[in-house]
Amino acid sequence: MKIQRVGIAAAASGALLSVSMLTAAPALAQGPWALDANIGAVSNYIWRGVSQTGDEAAVQGGLDLSHESGFYAGTWASNVDFGADEANYELDVYAGYDFILPNDDFSLGLNTIYYAYPDGDSDIDFWEIGISGGYKWVSLGIQYTAWGDDDNEDTLFDEGDLYYSIGVDVPLAEGFSIGAFAGYYDFDNDVSDDVNADYSHWGATISKEAGDFGTFNFTYEQNDGGDDDVWDDDAKVWVGWNKAF
Image (cartoon, rainbow, N blue to C red; front, top):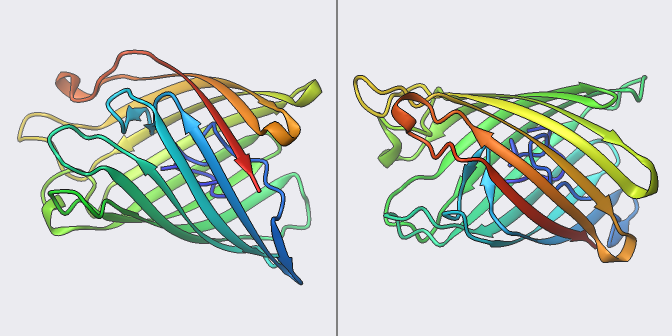
């Protein structure tokens, strides 16, 4: 899951950790309101260091409604492939508030995100709330899973999970930027009595804004596998493109 405005992947593949972040231009403005649309494609949809498509490509897109006060809401979708589960797509609905601070070098925001997999065999939807903040090029975020669907009980992505993230994004000349990011997923439940699924992940990216042609990204990402290699810890290199309207 990736969110354009929220400081997490949005948590992002986060916004903080979503390196395919958009440079949005309002497509429709009505006074203090703005409506944006975005589309994109990636060679591998990675969210918080783990592929959501079995290392295959994804097509993604969303809509965002924002107000000059700092409020925003939107929805975002992508194809997914979890193997045993028959879920073919992810649909996220989110809202939040970016505080207007007296010093533009600082940022602070609140968010809420509902992750839905409508055509899956299992009920694996879950809901997060989070807070993000930053100073200049550095961002921090914490997400808390406030609710997990019935089939999540005593498994992962259930109430009580915490996700911590940090990222650095440095603008360069000619529309280029470079970034680095890391995150830690602290699950409330274990995979089994003796296997803990908590894991760390990290990565780096280079992006190029190409005007009407959108934004292009090249990213390296990896995780530590967790206990007993619960997660695929192979290094991943992927490319992406997105465009806002």
